[in-house]
Image (cartoon, rainbow, N blue to C red):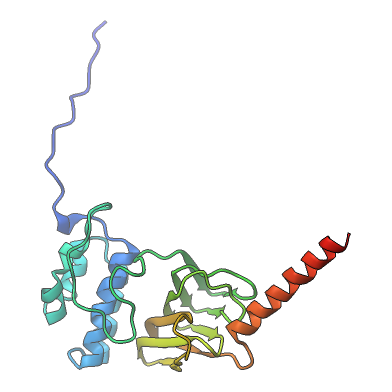
Amino acid sequence: MDLHKSPAPTARGPVPATELRCSDADRDRIADILRDALAEGRLTAEEHAERVEGVLNAKTVGELDLFVRDLPAAHARRTTAAYAPPGRPAPPGRPAPPGRPAPGTVPAEPDANVVAVFSSAMRKGRWRPGRRLHAYAIFGSVEIDLSEAIFEYQQVVIKAISVFGDVTIRVPENITLRGTGGAVLGNFEVSPLDSGEQNAPVVHVDGLAVLGNVEARPKRGKLVADILDRVSDKVDKALRRHLDR
């Protein structure tokens, strides 16, 4: 009986950078360039909305590059070179605009995603936000309440994307709050705060609202110090009860 062997696979060269599959972080970087171009007047609201839709549907790095190839920021940064393979540092890019952390201080990949599609989602109470959080409200609502959160990092970035939805962010009154974003037939509003304490947490909110709403502002009566004091009191009381035994 003859045994038929399948031919060995032919060797193939390395995949060109433009044909690599793009990630959510790649799309976010291109969306940042488009948002800045809209704010600078290089794109109209209609052009921005059309390109953002294309970015969300893009599959490869090369497809993403098409949406920013006529923008100066893309040439200064060499968009395709920004997608360095894991473990290889990305080349230096343009400096961070005012209100955003310096490049490299906060990872590009989110620690967590909060997604609401035709639904609602929230983060509130005693929780620990990471350095980066992404919130997506697509025909839904997302609530992120940091007023009682335990800040383990001084720099926290929240990227909020709202499409026919609503993203609401609340922070304590004594932190620093910054925001850079845009809206297309929607509302993107961040009430800036400046804390007098050098080591106070800094929350950066950016993103985009398309026929939706993104809002970030302080929650009255909520202070980081007050929260820490209450935790300390509970620890002290528990310790005293233990020592009295």
